[in-house]
Image (tube, rainbow, N blue to C red):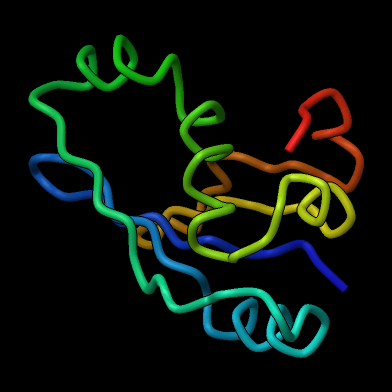
Length: 106
């Protein structure tokens, strides 16, 4: 099982994050009590500089967004791992293999 795929779409004023349908099905099967009702998370910013200043980087923001989209704790995410994939290019923006979040407490 895993990693969980989060799709990232770019907009003129920010980013939109959504859980890939196969990942949603995988989570619902493996973690039936997880709340996967959040469909997307939008983040607007004036410039990419604002984004970095506010969040520190995409990996930092991913630690906030992925649990919201999946309904999983950081401990559960440590078990399965996750990847943020840009919709337009298929480029992997963030990849956390299982165990990469071991230093973070939920």
